Length: 247
Length: 326
Image: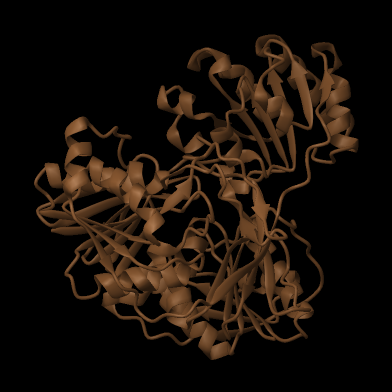
């Protein structure tokens, strides 16, 4: 079984979110990029576990990004993975990102394609589904566990108010979230090995963006918290009723 | 222009949140020059249930009465919705930004070659192209996304506008979609659903607990408050990781993202990862004994005090309020 893991870089969770050029561009100054947590902790680590257990033979990593994305791919390779590919283009349009990965994966015989459930920057939650749509593969979104036994794939996925267990035939795309695997820290051997692993650069396929971000906006600052003491709970409830109008 | 809206159901009945997407589709149709508001419904649903959709703004219902679709299946659903978009000639497709809506939206984008705005929080503006406001950076900012494709897809964040019911009726027509066994490569084996509770993603009122509650045995005070309010319970990551509470209650960066009308956080310090999952809540109340807890900066109302003293008093005040307003 061959697995492809889709990796995106994302600003560290603690990054200050600010915009430049008249609010048309994300201000990258001082921003540290990390592997998108859903791609790393759940998709990549689960793929590596499947290889370690013998269920998978190869784990490949792919990202869509410019040369700046290489640092994050090195971090991903330090966790593991046999081959890494960077499709040399950049886009905020999920269709473009998905179509690029689909074009790359098309003839390579991947049985499983794993992606995080969403990126923590643009929160589109759709790259995995769109890859499945382009390739006409089966798709399971928001998976919390993934097991492979004798070529049979069992996936648990989130549904409203609980979980559903599914079996799926291959090829299959899965978007991964919490529950799938535990976070790992790369060890020194992995970090050293990642330095010399090839990071293959792939030229992009011809696709056009269907959307563009015209501008950004920050939410209005909170006006400040209104404090109550433990003996003013009637007043708090009244405020929730008449001011906030939520009860 | 004609607008298509995917209306999901649970065992043949619509949830209140599903009607919000129909309202949204109707208003989007109105703002884009009028046109049909077509609701697509898949699987076994009674005519009485389908008739309701007219009261929320649908002018037509396309129904595919196929028992294989009684349970959500991303690939088969996307194929049927694609057929509905073609049959109705819709230029805008609306789904909910929930687990099933998000799963089909990405596939539809590929099948309809349509630009997708995922997580919309406003109606499309059409004075300069087709532009929709959405949340980005986990609720820390907004982006205005222009869709340039002929067909456009919008997934709406639940609880953005609420639900309005009015007069109206919709014609019901049969959807023709050519589904084959290959579309059902994913098969449901079993499900495990917490019964009798409003799911977190749909809850308008949420009471959430953190490490400040010291242990799972102390959750009774939150359950009492939740019951008095009619709220759903949630928790922070350390609480779920320590198995004090089930994982589906975890909200935050790596857990669920919610947008209730009211979020009451008890004994949660408000780390940035937690805020990412809840900061779109309309009103936030923070109860914490540490006045320096960062959560107070993101709160609308706060109580500095011991949860074990404050929460029971709040529960009593809620009960008193409910008794006098019924």
